[in-house]
Length: 282
Length: 293
Image (cartoon, chains in turn purple, yellow):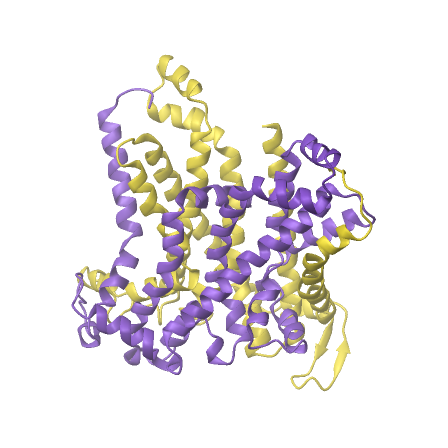
């Protein structure tokens, strides 16, 4: 701070409090709703403080499922989401780091063609090419499978860029020294480059985990078999019944369960998260 | 393009890029080219006959009131989302940059919405404003304001805009805060010595220096509002009432998977790709500027 201005500091705190008061209620109300029996949510005004049904509601949702998605329990959806998030994040990191390594450290024919093809994926988000991508996945026969759920989302231009930028900043001498000492490219990659990239990998993992967990449109399209449905996409199915029939207490319990894992990741790994966010988008 | 060019190898580099390249070609390049091709065809609903029609799908789109409406909705929606989200996060970042006590606590709370999926954000706001039991709808009714996003298109658009902006505040906040912390203290101190008050310092020094960050965030917010908000719309208003929240991405999905009008859906995909390409170029121009900055 440049000078002491108690009034302005006070104002800053005030604004931050207002900001938090604006940001938190949706989550708070969802939490409160998830701790009450359904009949307390049937007419306005609904309670603003938590009730005593927390355990009942969450265990019902986790073990029995909700509404029209009744056949599979939320527990299994969470497992699916976890598998999806983990496969997407590790897959993206693995294939991006190897291709960045090839692009930076080798000279080979079609090198820039490869680079530009990977680059092009930046301009083609799933939402834009929904129908034809769905057709490809259908023709490959991987609808309703973990492969179909994850593989098409694993390519990543941003991760490749991030690693490319990082490798370019690694002093050339390191690779030369390794070479003089008789290390081949793979040895250099495993023993020197990977340990150096540790923080970058971790930061990227945080961002990609959230990305994978929060996928919506893609799982919605390719899973017609409910045993593969993820928690984030199922919340929508739980609310597509007549307004009076929505089991709000269980829907909100499910929403809380969908929020908790990525939130924990963000809060516990806050430093890495901020670093990852800024670097991924740079 | 720069490179370290150190190792020699005939096969190894191809093995290293093969997985990424294969996935890119199969799931990105090929579908995109299919979309391009499909956008030039008209197919009947059963896929029995196809006819090559050049640009007819595109001209039909731009004469279609529903499509033009969808364009207007998307522009209103993304402008609203961007302004709400950037405005509030800039204010919050400036304040968080000022305070010392409790700063990390504030930051933690403000990062929270980032982790929440757009569709969940949509459902949470949908619940808050539910005309029968929503708590905010209840407060509004106490103020004699009848809120009903099931019948009122303006209410529905406000609802999805708020949900989208709410979810994106954290993202903008992180970038603004990083931008603010990168501004050299000496500049601000020099201005203070010259007698410039806090507000004047903000408008004359801080804000212009945040220019590149703001510009970057503008582009990213538009991208977000255009493409990443599908979940919010799909889970809450489904484009309604009366198409008042039918954004372009939602319409591509609806025409392709619900209406089975593949030619038109593909043409819409192609138009959206053009939008992404323009935005990506914008963003890269910005990065170039930042290097010289």
